[in-house]
Image (cartoon, rainbow, N blue to C red):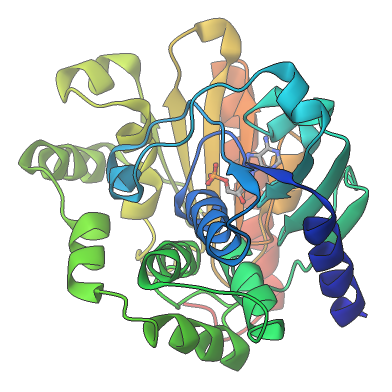
Length: 328
Ligand code: AMP
């Protein structure tokens, strides 16, 4: 069945002279890598077509992928095929002009929440959207062209979204597809330097997070990154939000949460939720959010709601620990 949808997507691509690529808001390595990588594959394979990626988002650690395309007139959208990558809901597509496009293809690895495409290829068990793009490339290798740059972008998304091939969605297929990218000549030393080197100040911030974090009775670690803290360490929102990953290796804390104050208080407090062994997306869904079983996002609108969410996560951790063995 997936072979049919991949073939249908390739046929659609062939039918259009202009293809526009889209990704989700709050850009990460996977939505950046999948759009950049697919753009390069299409550019190499179909030099006569116009392939556009119009997006305004900036990300410090993804700068190495280079800038996106500048604005395009509305008429350009109207004649185009849109391919939206790594975005489960239409409300989270970063460039809202996707809606002007004549037809939409959705390629995503999140739980299906909104089948907004004319063609929807959704595989929630995949570890990244980049893995799906590589799978697409692998299915039509004799027809599609790739180079080391496309492979680097796609490999970067696979690495970041799978926690360096650590998360449970990683399968033998993931590694076989990653190997296919490495074979194109990815410079992993430079790539990992781009992805993982930290500024001195950021490491100081990390130390501060460890000072400030708290733990509930049943092992939910959490921290709030206030505007004051962000100003003190000179953090952009992206770096402030990365605090979630600092708490991922605490023994007995199966769930960890970061609450990040955004610029305008009326926009609420951004919540990032992560877990191992137990699932956490059901808690996010009660607070304007969602996501994967063990990696989700939400928004709370008061300190009381923040405390309520922490209690819900604590109850989920308690229930899990009481009914399961082997967790750590
Ligand atoms: P984040 O913490 O923003 O990296 O989000 C983790 C996962 O949850 C990502 O796969 C997001 O796509 C998803 N996610 C984050 N926020 C939301 C939301 N408000 N609604 C649905 N999914 C979300």
